[in-house]
Amino acid sequence: EDQVTQSPEALRLQEGESSSLNCSYTVSGLRGLFWYRQDPGKGPEFLFTLYSAGEEKEKERLKATLTKKESFLHITAPKPEDSATYLCAVQRSYNTDKLIFGTGTRLQVFP
Amino acid sequence: DTAVSQTPKYLVTQMGNDKSIKCEQNLGHDTMYWYKQDSKKFLKIMFSYNNKELIINETVPNRFSPKSPDKAHLNLHINSLELGDSAVYFCASSQDAEGGDEQFFGPGTRLTVL
View 1 (cartoon, chains in turn green, brown):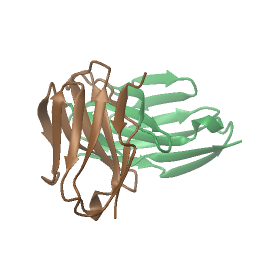
View 2 (view 1 turned 180 degrees about the vertical axis):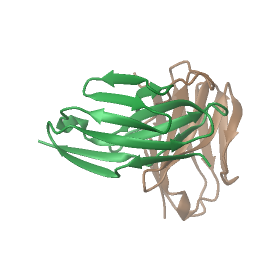
View 3 (view 1 turned 60 degrees about the vertical axis):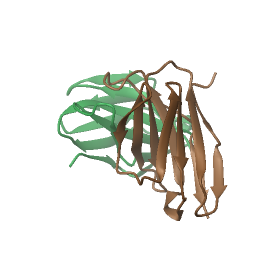
């Protein structure tokens, strides 16, 4: 059965303290892996799509990487405005319009 | 300009009532979706439509009926509401169903069934 697991569930960081979020997946044929950011009371906001193992993408303080079993979202020198829930989702190579989401990592960055 | 909009933002109603949530996207996308996010923040797809045609219908009770009058709109009608229907419902859209394009989400509708 296709599954997406994110860890940790919650992460508290001091401003400037770099860390990584993990997304482990089991899927029968991966077409793409997506990272989204969700602020309280809002819809998820797209960050990255990764398609193949070894691929990396960066945006400001965020860098996403992908292997055959997991993806990492690295946060370098985070700021309080990076506080949000980060969601990972996989898209299969068939039924491509369906995203399977993990339960997210709630990140809090304190000044 | 709001890309994906939903109304209402909050919906409080009694068990057994029928209610609708509306969604509109102004991105010119071909595919629209409904997701349900439960109290543990787990986001699960319910339906997707491509050019007004139903593509995905997950194991959702038939009390839930999506309707797409045109490719910019996808509404969700819920009959005989139950306590377990309380959740946040998100509408989303993407350029097409197969391209691996990102999905753009609306702000959500928080449904509370009393």
